[in-house]
Image 1 (cartoon, rainbow, N blue to C red):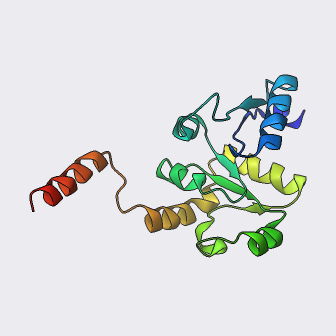
Image 2 (image 1 turned 180 degrees about the vertical axis):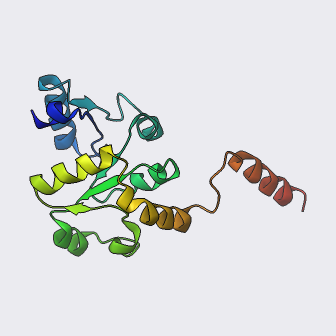
Image 3 (image 1 turned 30 degrees about the vertical axis):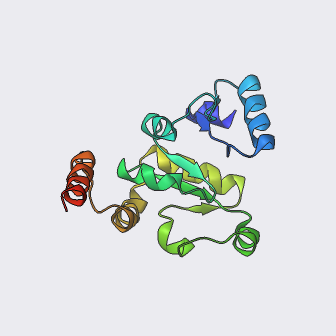
Length: 157
């Protein structure tokens, strides 16, 4: 009801190897299709299609949000199990350094973060830019040209 009241829809993207999450997403979509959209790999193979279609990103520890930074998508991290995750899997980078958005562990925190993302989460704009620069040297449409020149340079040696 809250999602409907504030005008939110969620494209849910479960991890492709997590069959339990995939079933859960399908059930949510079946019961609340006006709020939850099944964005699983069987329906949307390329995650970039979702990132382009979305206004913001909610994630746990998935690095998919990094690609969304190119589009300056606000991001919220649901990390209620951070200690366990760090103990079991860990991350390649310092978590606080590379997460340019609020970290939420409660429904109230999640709702507040979502409402801020609807406004573009301006309080996090500088952090998004900082992290974007960490991962992307360029922010233009010339990537293919650069790769082609690099390959041509390697071949001509």
